Amino acid sequence: MSDETRDQATYTSMLEGTAEDWAAISRHARPFQKDLPNRIVAHLNLLKGDCGGYPVDRLEHSLQTATRAFQAGEDEEYVVCALLHDIGDTLGPSNHADIAASIVKPYVSEKNHWIVEQHAVFQGYYFFHFLGLDRNMRDQYRGHPHFEATAQFCHLYDQNSFDPGFTSMPLEAFVPMIGRVFDRPKRSIYLRQPA
Image 1 (spheres, rainbow, N blue to C red):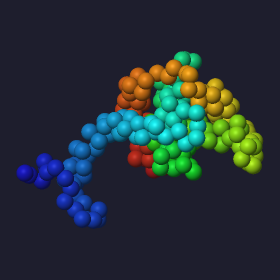
Image 2: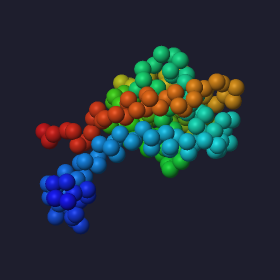
Image 3: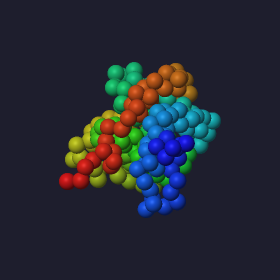
């Protein structure tokens, strides 16, 4: 196999990397990117079965949130964000919103990213006072351009999506939407040029 078509990089340190190494890596990047929706769906399925004391499991909560957003006519990107807003629960129970926001950030608008990133604090309005916390913790963000949109997301779609009697759309219905939203990054540190 010639250097131009080798299947993987040969360096042991990036300082030793060559154009051929990075060409090999780049050939793998697009198929890996295209498989991202499948990895997201697999991770969503990890939310199945664990109720954590809630009336429904975490996957059902996510499906209800996304279904409500879809039925209300929200755009596809918003619906996918609604579906993924709690995807970080498995690896980051203390900062799940940060994890979900990091996943969606390159693929969605700044507004939708901010909603996902801040939803946990805004959701606290409905229960923090039962835990000895300030239910108005979200007020620290009052005046932010996306404050009202985040409060609305929690009120209309998140806080009320724990209903065992609700008929959610199946996860499979959202798979094509996930594929379109995660097709390629809209914004990335790698796409920006230095000023």
